[in-house]
Image (cartoon, rainbow over the protein chains, first blue to last red):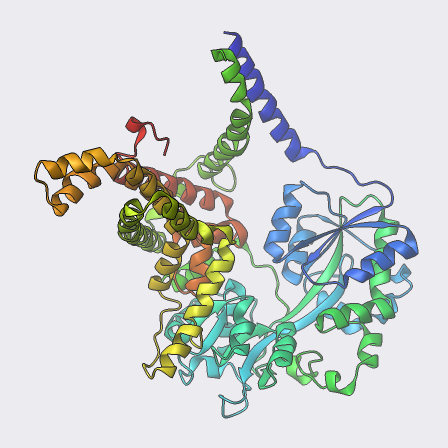
Length: 352
Length: 273
């Protein structure tokens, strides 16, 4: 009998712990900011520099995908103050009321951010109330100039069967559909069922020509010459070119995805002043430059672009030309019905 | 020690099993039985029979079944060979066979990927010998190869335990009674090691059924196992209800298959798994 009571008490105790563990949000002390960012997306020295200058301690957390960030953020186990995530996820967080509006104009170094990117940000953050652009880029084709005769300028090379078995597509639902939709001349934010199904048919027909669907390894496979071309993010393209000088990056003329990774302040943040200090710090010329040189993604910071070497400035993967991004679009969050259609078609494609 | 004291010793395990097995299981099942807007439904469970999911389930079963079979075919002769060694040499052999487990399994799978890839080491050697290229990477076969490589020790250890525990006297007695080597194998050794094979199947079949990382790395994203679909439902589509439903349905499948294969899983002989 005694044992049973003890066992029951124990079980209750554990259950209580689990549930309260889920709901309690540890609040941060006054001078601590919890920052959530993509992995290897910030020069770690800048964090200590910030703490030295302001006395504000940074708790730094990393994730690899926007979805992983969202899951960790909503689970509430850690209370994050600042989040750096991608356009469509920013959109989702704003829609769900997870963000606090920030008075960017009061920040000393905000003027360094090219207004062009604030304008582009409007598509996921209307009125520019919540998000601060951090890095941006495009999606395009990274190809081996030794094995591809003509310069690549169209998505066409992925669909004409000429390089069958040597193509790598992105193992990401949205990015793969984007390629097909843009090739067909549709918007990448289309919600038209017929257009999406047409894109899916195109991808299904293409599958036999695809060597593999990869995310992070896509670049490495082209560098290692296991494949002739891959759909990659522009930041990967710059590094790919460093490893293998035969590689070139092209933004197809039909247009592509223009992505922006932005900072937002979450509703959990108790000290807006400190959060603004951190954002202001990131916009500062020397800090933005250090971060740029750490990852070589396109930066929205004008002062950094002005100071670049000509060689880097002329690299379309780092600084895309105006006309190359003319037909590019920023992702918007898809409504649930469209997302479900995407998901079903994607699973069909992958399991074929 | 009296009974009560022994029971107290079980408390850490009890906490573990309640906190990390039972409660999460309750969460998963409760998610599986409702729609995203919290209405009761069985759709998430029956979704496993949708054509896409069914295809993935069959591929998963295929990979798990063939991998287990290959593991047995490698492990059993190996166990018999080790049994024939002197005890000192046995230890060295077992050590060598378990050595790969000391390395992180993702690293080992990435190494396999390097070996198999188009310009990989195997193809490089083949082309030096003038034998042309093989294209294994991004096929179901590559996934099976990776699974066997990863899970072989989990089959070998229980099989070996069982084979080594068979007393020499019994083998000698059967030989005295006129049994040839074949009869010794089929009538004495095999029946006495079935429980080890049963545990081995449980240890290989179950995890490879729910596997998704190996399929991602060696399948090139072109082959979907049920594990991949569940992972995608949780991390990309964020339909946790469907993901949970598929997980629970998969659990039922695993349970049924282990009951079928591993009936003689040694519980009667005092083994736990």
